[in-house]
Each structure stands twice: as C-alpha cells, then as structure tokens.
Image 1 (tube, one colour):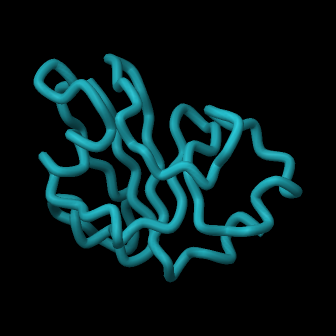
Image 2 (cartoon, helix red, strand yellow):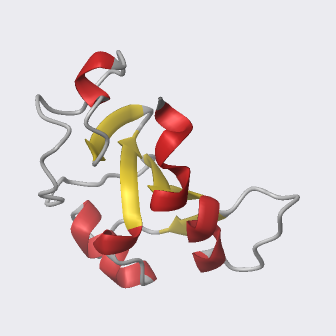
Length: 105
C-alpha cells in the first residue's frame, strides 16, 4: 500500500475528510508505477500541488528557498516536476497545496 497524505486545501480529495482527522488516501501501487500515474488515478492535478515529499524527502517544490532549507531531497533539483518517479509498496507521499506554501519555510 502507498499512503498519500494531504495537507491544506488538498485535504478535500481524501474520502471522509474532517478537520480533526488526518487526510490520507491509501492505494495499491501495483497498477500505478509512477507518482504521476498515481496522482492521475486519485484525481489530483499537478497544478494544485506546491510541494511533494516522498518518504519524508523533498521531491518537488515551487519554493525558491528549497536549496537553503536543508531538507533531504530525492534528487538533485527539487524544481524538477517530472513526476515519472517510481512508486513502490510502503511509500509515503506528502502533498501540500499552494495554500501551504509557507509551511516549509
């Protein structure tokens, strides 16, 4: 199983979303081999996302301060929005919308 944790306005994509509960979508990764395909499957557009974390590491962001924030990164450039990144069983993905842009500062 893959966990997709949603923050900010993206929480609306989680089934039964409630302000007092975590907003998590749990999916089986067998059909979806990349993050791009997984997002399409759950109906979240890339244009809605401001930051993506994969297993607690920064994968992609629009925050120009990312290189100075000290986050461990999945790849060299966190500004690369090519989401053809493989997903495997046990992965945890964190998605933050534009309304959560300052969260990582």
